[in-house]
Length: 202
Image (cartoon, rainbow, N blue to C red; front, side):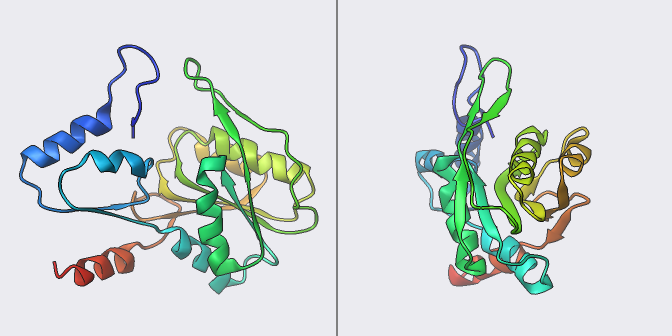
């Protein structure tokens, strides 16, 4: 996951893994919602980064869990995540800017008025690890009058008490994919990956 060196001495782990794969003779790579797709350009071999965000959005749509939902992403650079989800849900999207302290790891959210009053909200992210950022986002939209708030992610690492933290801050449910097996892995990426393999004749 470490795709940037924030402090002197930190490992640039993505670069190391990429080099190892190339040295092992890997001919092609398929990823699902890479944390920073730009890093993949370092690869000299063909790579395809798939997105499971539409599958997560379909989960909510098919089950009728949300009404007039706002698709919300964490960080302006990740607004494409919200727009992807809205391509399925078709009821609006927005984002909250985030800022992480490189030394403490603490994340702060911008104070932004969102169109969430009396409507459901789904907060989408690629990864939920400690759950701190997601918990703050859930609380922020609940405090602004959202009816129901759901947390959705592609890679549910869910370290420590992250689930408890997110739910206690007002989330109705946490939904993840099976990219990382977890108690919240309710959406399978198998159809997504199999289509990519068939498309390329693997």
